[in-house]
Length: 438
Ligand code: HSE
Image (cartoon, rainbow, N blue to C red; front, side, top):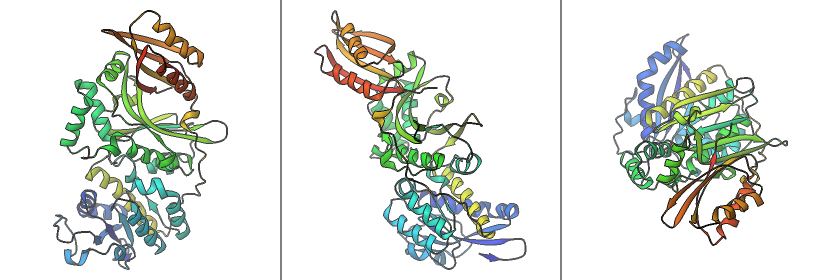
């Protein structure tokens, strides 16, 4: 950190990784640095960029000769004397964990967008930042361009947050929106999402809920002040959602969304965190979140309900989140302060089997013959699952039954389904969807 004159402080930035987001942040800093200097008194100066392949021209505008800035040695950047703040955008877990630890131990604030790392090792790194009295900021790790981490950490810190519901994966929201609005099949829509660059060639992380699960762990950690890791999050994906599930959702006044839920439950300060396809009533604000957009709906105490909406992926939206953190870290460095965070005790996490107050939509394919409906209804009754509505559609010699239940316990619903599966007249159990409760 150097003072050029009394009113402007230069903060030197080291960038670890220069892919899509790294290129966007380097160019955004270059474009905005005069305005940032005018408004904050801080001039950001990218002095070091660590890349794997030095031969690639990344089209970045720099204030210094490229030969002085680019290096293949990431560790040298993480601890460099001419770097005041480190930005980590490498991705993966092991290498960034080592680099961030080294930077924090060298007394350098770190900004990262690495959700996988924070969802597995966040508490360890936050404790290291605290021990070194420097910032570890991570707005870009969840819902990219949507300011979410800072509102949860600062504006809403005193709120007794009850529940957070999020659409935090753009790829799956794009697929579900297309299926809903165009009647397209899952496979067709996934292929389109891949052609448009939303979905990876191997879409598993997005469509099976791993990506949203990691983000949900971070949201729960920040919202409730306890350590929740990715493995604590129950996740189900959207690959089994059919066109007839979507049609039924529409007919019954719902839309299917991949919803991440983080909530406080029970008496003993437990939290429950899960990601699964969910029926959302059309009058809920999350139902209106279309295409690849993300949104997070927060149910607080004093504040009531609020929703944050925007772009959850992409180079420029993610760079916007990184730049906000960078300016914050640079300002804190100038005033010799940092954002305190922690300690984070390990969360007591409720298992999905202990969920007790959710409504379900259950699709069951049966042989279309006399007496079947009463056998199915009996199974619900024996396990204490109360039916709120039922729709039957005849399909030649079989019928599709779709039940919506009143609030029920997950364990009871699972036992009902196990009993139904064993009946001769039940040909298949279709989708099992939970319904957003108020
Ligand atoms: N693949 C993610 C999404 C973005 O589709 O939202 C990165 O987390």
